[in-house]
Length: 279
Image 1: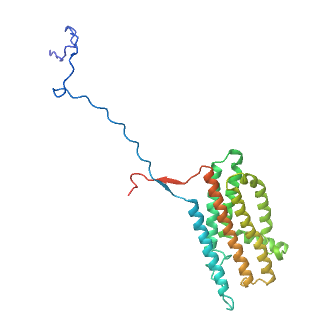
Image 2: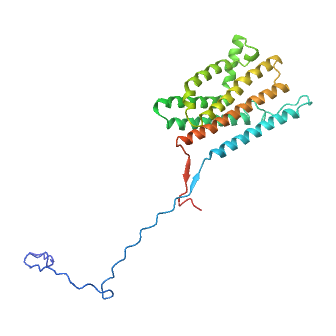
Image 3: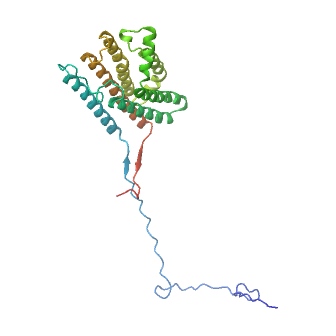
């Protein structure tokens, strides 16, 4: 039979008397085998704030959009003036304002989408009783953005025009339901909109857009009807160019107001540099 012996120290052995240890009263001498007292380390300095990187600057966005509108308008009207006295000349479709599926159409659709996104951000940060109105405005902008490229309003107008035989200012008959829908949305949302900072700017932009899209569209339709459907006449080209220019200017003005409104609501799209992204 094997008996295992476990090592015990004096404190663990029950038969060993434990003698209490008396601390030495003499203070330790530095350098005599006792480490010197450690001085408390100073508090670490607070790290410097990380440099801020603004991803979207409202002034830069509005300036860039206004510059694009200016270039498109100048190209259209310069080509129209160049065609004076040149029979058969037509403004190239790529730069003609009012034509479908070209640069101006794409840019107008992009502006509508930007405004729809800003309205959605404002809706997310609004009180519950107003949220559905902001969502309604955002949906309206998104639908108009889709219509800019799909031209569904032209098909609706053709159906109304051929069914009821509209003419003159109502040649482009899609403006009839458009005026009704704009009035309904304005009655629902205008009071709420005007209470916000930047609301007057948004309202001014919306007014410019509606005046161009509906008012000058009606004038252009009357001219188109009177000329027998000549879409290359100089006066018609000027009116259609002014219409599209006012639409884009209105969208840019409304975007400036929405950016101000979003900033007043505490919404920012920004970022910060991290240590991994610093050069």
